[in-house]
Image (cartoon, rainbow over all chains, first blue to last red; front, side, top):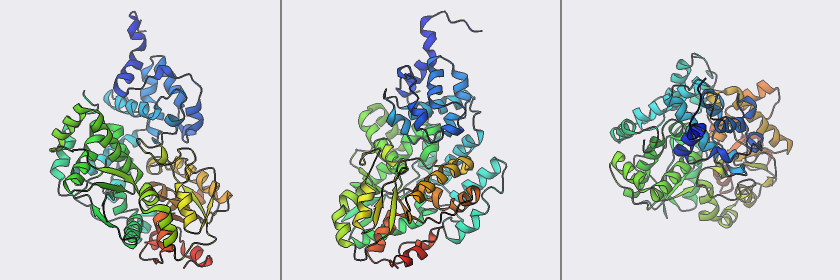
Length: 186
Length: 288
């Protein structure tokens, strides 16, 4: 077990999140309003207030490995209702990026895969190519026939195009991708 | 009147009818929509989930292109596109280092001259409820409508009405001659892209929203977000199968309902693109 000897180490994780997001988790009073308001709390392994509690306890691993940070749909109801004014949805965003940075994004791997394929579509075409996105996602998540019944319906109603829309400024977009960093000013 | 327009990726595909109907009603009101030249995807949730800089740089290019195209106001139908444009515009004004960094990455400096508006705000304040009321030649008499706002009122930087109990859509619905209904799920989240990555959760959320609408004896649901619409419309047959209940609730874009009152038809408004067929309902109510 790691023994913490210096005072500042006790709040290392909280301070890291504070520095990256501007949100101070130590203000959380554990009222549970975020969890009560969260539409996705039933499926989360850690409830939103528990995530904040782990941060207060300087316990990073359970938080970075949980499913919660990936299931959060960023609807921001928690942020809006928090009596301490903590932007919890922004804390979740920061935790996602930290989890990837530290290679601990194991909570919902298919969601990380979806995000990456989505961004790759923008990088290639400048816009999202929805049919390609869904097909590539299905292959990556090893469920090739997922939602296959929706394909003919959507194509029939011309709600999916067979080809990607390519913008003219693709080179600029690729350059943006090449230079973008995970965190601002880091 | 010329107004800048940022359709966003969904409106080119799954939400084609949102694009069609918005363009149609704008034409009806004498407004010319001018697309942001060569616009790109705003990055949506995946960008801000994985990279902070990317989440600013992609909307920055759109703001820059809008400015270079002399567009002073840009209307976005998709709440996510809108919030990303606005969030980036604000951050550029507040953080000079970020502003410099983005200008360098994107290859041009945005002078912060663009005003972003969400489509609902544009309908409510710019076109105006009164004009919508006066233009409603074929009112939607007797149509019981619940307005579904989703997370729109809580997105970063968004200044639309009351976050917990918004009424802007309801006021427009009322101006169309329809019956706006109070209900519990106005601002509950639809689960966004979880409908693809965790379909079980997406279907549960959709079921709760549809059940709440049905509980108020709604005929249909009005929306202003392409993701809300597809999660409740395209997935509705799957929800019905899983939860063994027949909802048969058409999901209209608010712009389609407005278009109907302007005397526009099925093709003009892309009503045939809706998965839950609204035509029988509209015939019963004497709208079509």
